[in-house]
Image 1 (tube, rainbow, N blue to C red):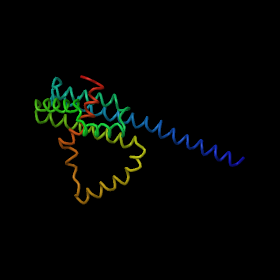
Image 2 (cartoon, one colour; image 1 turned 45 degrees about the vertical axis):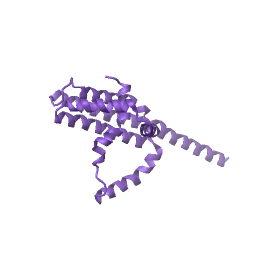
Image 3 (cartoon, rainbow, N blue to C red; image 1 turned 135 degrees about the horizontal axis):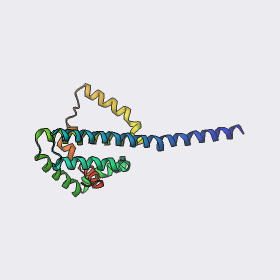
Length: 188
């Protein structure tokens, strides 16, 4: 009888842990990610309101639409979908991603250097937040995060790896399929 009680108690604890992680924690991560994306969108609006970035510029509309789409489809993005998007784009380049990237570059060229900087920074922050969401929403990646962060800290202290690539045009173009999908969820 005591063994049965132990089994039932352990089963109940496992179900509770499962529920805490797969329901409540994921709900929390989704809300937190959306809140951070709202903050970026609000900052972009504030910059546009200050006059640095015109409200009627195509780049502002694309950035706002991409942020709105990311907010809207955050619940659908995960590690497997993200990796599938990257692999699919490598195998057969996504015409939507390429079209978005060209449209975005043309829109950026019409802005002042300050306006370009603001829009690029907003999308860079959005990408970091989405990567953080993907990592923190995946049990496997969450478990791999501490050793990966340790390696990054060591390589950064040794000046082996600098974060130039993360802000580069090549990195931004890598995210074009994700951006195009986000824009698709909330067209301007």
